[in-house]
Image (cartoon, rainbow, N blue to C red; front, side, top):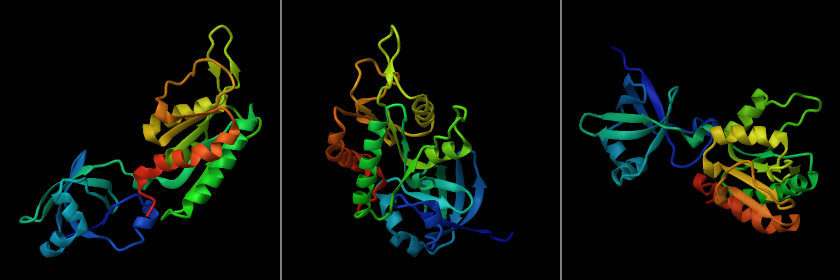
Length: 252
């Protein structure tokens, strides 16, 4: 039976897939079997080459070693046998499927806060990109006029594929008789979807403290940014943004 070679790229740190596959592959495999949550393969590279690889040294120390397998997705090494040349992979949700973007869900009902947030975000990204190995960009939510309140396929994809989701949760009013702060309907819909598809450390709800009341979303403190005046944002937002992006190892 002919061997069908499968190329694999070592994912040392966050890198968009379109860039990953542009560089030389790190491992050659022959797939033995495909399981529901994993994959078994034989590596075709010389044993000495594998032993000297940086990823193998990380594997020996017990770290999670992740690969993108051509046409199969992202997997982490579950077990490796140098003698038999066998590797067992476990399916992995990878940051490599994300794009280097920050999605900003803004509101129009109390525009002053969103305008200040957008300006501070754009400047913070410019400053961050001076040190980042990958340039980040800001994606703004779509706000079509006279359109029904629903997310388009482009909106869903932009939220799902972003590194971070940031929403302006500044209240636009108070619900009568409940004391609950009312948020922009667009913010509620987009934040609701982000809570389903993003990890907690990828979501930030920023709020200008202008009305007293309860928040309709129960978010932990590290996912919220409270500010009493828009002039605070240039001092607080950049460091918070850098902290949220730390897991992607973008800074040299």
